[in-house]
Image (cartoon, rainbow, N blue to C red; front, side, top):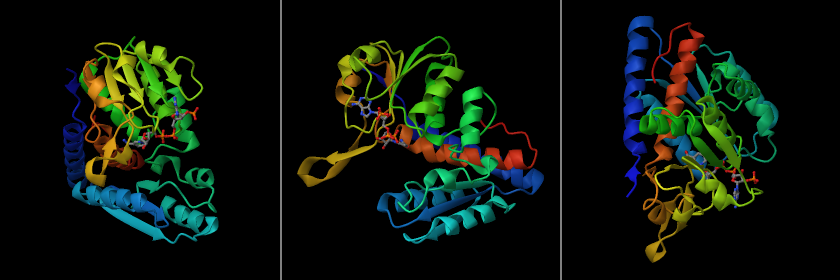
Length: 293
Ligand code: NDP
């Protein structure tokens, strides 16, 4: 039976370290990191995410600035807000909650954020920094996955890693991070041939697809470490919905060496990494050494 990789506990540990770092910054430098979160429209899931981000930012002792704009907000108005936040010295991190309404060009908005305040790590400059090994801000979900993997395996060097999914938010940055740790990386996607065979080669298997329970146990190499990024809401018993990952947990845990559950795996690490990135950005903006990991 696979060991459970407890993302909830790891996230709590990371949030505590963030809280201690914030206290030290306040005590030694009179600096309180600040995170601005921008929400456009009424998307219910986005509202929940933004509320949680604001709450956890405050709990870590940081300043939280929430900007809620109407569904009909135009591109120029949003860009004007980004420009204001870019020049605000009290704001060290800026996050624009995605998805944005159709009239707004999400790429243009993300690339208008000061790259050194881009705590989501989606700006082209940060994508380039990650690809070339330069220091920068790394997307929160893959960063959280890497922390769980390093905790579990210590040295990742030389391992065969397969990432299923190639989105800009999860799959591609995840592959870049694994490569930086000297894994031999395969990035699989919807056109990959013999996906089961590709997955069976993986010492480290990361599933970031968005298809409920797509990866069964017989695609997994015995003893592999499995990171399930998927968050899918499916019909459960008595008409209630429940969350499942992209991996079929019941069959996978009989084969894998270690596996993240859904919920309670990667999900909690994502917001904790956002807080961590905000402290990193605040330190960099003030020329203070950052050592939290
Ligand atoms: P996207 O929809 O942007 O990307 C999905 C990827 O999966 C694509 O690259 C796609 O390939 C690939 N794919 C789709 N179908 C198949 C298939 N049958 N076989 C192989 N590959 C396939 O999703 P995201 O990357 O944004 O998210 C992935 C999952 O992670 C979702 O469940 C999402 O909810 C979850 N998520 C969880 C987070 C967390 O905090 N835990 C944060 C972000 C996302 P192609 O490119 O060829 O179309």
